[in-house]
Image 1 (cartoon, rainbow, N blue to C red):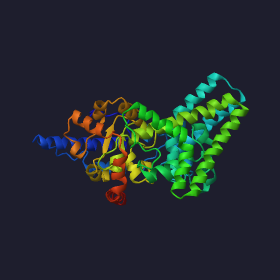
Image 2 (cartoon, rainbow, N blue to C red; image 1 turned 30 degrees about the vertical axis):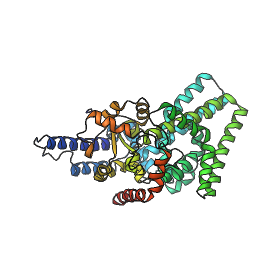
Image 3 (cartoon, rainbow, N blue to C red; image 1 turned 180 degrees about the horizontal axis):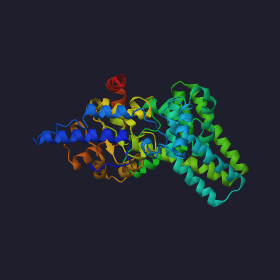
Amino acid sequence: MDASINPLLLKPDLIVLQNLLQDIRSSNAVSSQRPTDSSTAHNDQSSMRALDEVLDEITVFTSWDLKDLPTGKGFRAEFLRNYISWAQGIVRNPVDVVFLTHLILYLGTSVPSAAFLYYHFTWAHGIFHCLLQLSYCGSFTLMLHNHIHNNGLLKKKHAWFDNTWPYVLEPLMGHTWDSYYYHHVKHHHVEGNGPEDLSSTIRYQRDELSHFLMYVGRFIALIWIELPLYFFRKRKPGLALKAAASEMAAYLFIYLAACRNFYPTLFVLVIPLFLMRIGLMVGNYGQHALVDDVDPASDFRSSITLIDVPSNRHCFNDGWHTSHHLNPLRHWRDHPRAFLKAKKEYTNGRALVFQNIDYLMMTYRILAKDYLYLADCVVPIGDQIGMSKQELADMLRTKTRKFSEEEIQEKYYEGRKTQKEAKKKDDLYISKI
């Protein structure tokens, strides 16, 4: 594994990573019959205490921690204190000031930029606007992710605004109205990358570029019809009609806008839509490309955990994906603590943990078949400790293999009892946390 620790890691990430590195050192000392480190630094108890200490720390910005912000006297410090106090009266969770910060950022930049493009279009402004939205799309989508899982971000007295801003910002960021909610919450988390998940990776050879292109192309071309049909098959006609209506309404809105003024619509609505859908599939591919061929239904073995900067600092702990699948309602700040508390379950479940790599790079390295690079990023836990770099690479390679229809039938349908037992174990983990 890569022994370097990124200095820009969030503090909870750093605490968990140091704890896991301590486990590796202790295991290696035992196996080589060297004296073990008797220090309590970074053991489970001290690490949990350290996580408890930062659990309620306010997040104002994604790029800077609270300790990096101005304090004491002076205009900036006073302005910041007043802003935090005001924002905490609006956001539902007092630590989530950052959500209001981002709403102000997007409404104060994306909306005026889009409006001015329709007033006075220039190619330079159109390109700049697309680049601006591209820089926003990760953080926005994961803020929206928190919104749809928790039925809002703001206090009830601001419900009118909490229910309105997604309809203003979603089209500008490349989302069609409510489609992320219907696909992600009502579909993906129900199916969990299984055979009926429309974004499942199991039917693809996940280190082949041609299969990846088919995966992305299918989603872009067919999700508009496949998702409503899925809900009909599941005898949920209400969800089917809502999903279809919201998708068609968004397409109609884009079409009418393009008929009225094509070039601004191209840069404000059309290009962001394609970029977002490609980005969503590239990210989901990285999250679910490594699937265990023995127990693929277990959340521990069909998703991964990343301890990194882009996913966790800038995208609200999106790297803790296994923890999120185990409990979709868990607050984003709670993932590191939940991981450490259930480290034994992660170890027994043979979960995969990586550092210094995000989902986009994960997808790229898998498609490049660069398993040695990925092995360098593995933070080994349990039986993985002591495996050589080549052994880790060979193990990762086995997890990108395409499942045949016979295997899917055996592991997901004929083996339903086994899969229910695996799910029961996962549910037991959730109840403990």
